[in-house]
Length: 127
Image 1 (tube, helix red, strand yellow):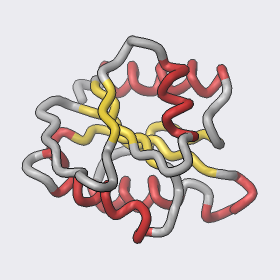
Image 2 (cartoon, rainbow, N blue to C red):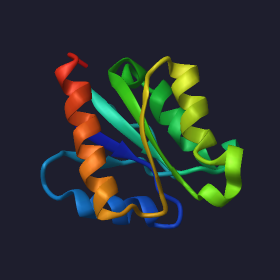
Image 3 (cartoon, rainbow, N blue to C red):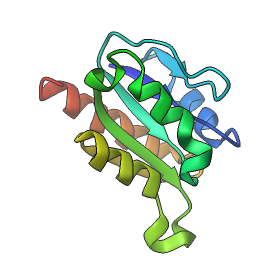
């Protein structure tokens, strides 16, 4: 399973670095989000207003990318209560894919382990 991610402050990228070389990674570039991923992938997204995360939608709407989207992981700050991971929740609803995990900031070692388990479980379900 490939991992596609978007980062604004670098927190998501720091999480990606903790995952090691078990996955193939693709970063959505805000300046040019139009690239094709022709394999199943999980999307990791931080929580920001839609104006900031618009490149994610541009990427998902490009070619057949949304077809290969199998799950979403959200990052954010729990201090924002009900707004925690709202970007991931909205994308999960909009694209009809499961929200498989959520973590704060750049994640803990437990988050890394739980993320890997969630991806493995998604893969085992044939996604």
